[in-house]
Image (cartoon, rainbow, N blue to C red):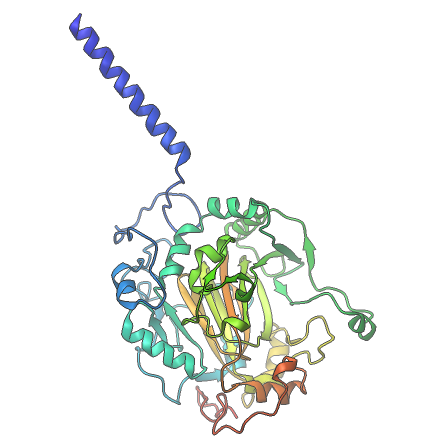
Length: 458
């Protein structure tokens, strides 16, 4: 009898324990297994332990070094940064970390770049040689080097940024679908008959009069995030070609000035919560002028999506949270060779009309004595700095998520004079149309050099 009672008690305890675990699972947020976007278990080598709490403040270097998030190891995704091996087993090479000097960056003729690797081709040549400086943000010495590159207004890349590592882990397919389904998280999806996406905005009354026959180059379509995601994942699975239909998802958050409440920031949107380094209460490495910050803009790309060449006014920090994108960068001095739309009334103002993936158009426009450029692959976990007014052309190599934030022109207005001459005064905001103080030297002038034996960019 005693044995029966003891067995019954054990059964009751086991049942209670099982129910407790089951209830706990129903109320606990699912564990984040890996950053690839699917909730599958991790099968690679063991990872370093995760920190016990959220990454510390942007400017606390000692604490960041102690608590920084890991660089992920995913052997089945060699284009990603791997733990302890930035090169991804030799698929990438980069120059050694060194202080900025006036010979940086090295430029290659733009025609050579697009001829060597056509933008319609999403297969990266291996090994890919990075010419940009690539620096570890969580290393105090390399971070100080990165600050010098930023202050010199030249492009560079950083990796191992704590908030970016957090977002990489958090932004699974399940998590993102939940966030996009919430009321108030607005976004739009554009659809193109091929892989090219020319930026456009609805024309003003004067624009409609000036361009009565203009038609939008893409369509805005109704879509849930889950539907768009399935379409993008399917493009990778099917190895979708450039002539097929493509879709591009875009969303943004308000500028920082609208979120500030005294010295604190009201972070109600999941993007601002998950990327606090892009929404600081005071200026930091990423946001150098809160008053002129444009908020966070996120672009969800799929295999092959091309954003046509354009420039932005403002110092631009671009974080790659999923996948990889190819960026071709060229300084403001190249503006005159790129056939940018100069009329501010045009819906695609400041964007290039040249199809860089079209061999004949590219060869005609980018002769050896003209535009010099930099070719870089922005990999998941990296941040690219694009100086104000640098022209950039972007190709999504696979399903990708990129979020960027811009915050005003540099103090010495680098690039404004070149863009002003090229665009006839239309290329800059009204506030920037003022006499510029004479500078000893403009970035993008004799300091930029061409490689492959091509002459210096002037």
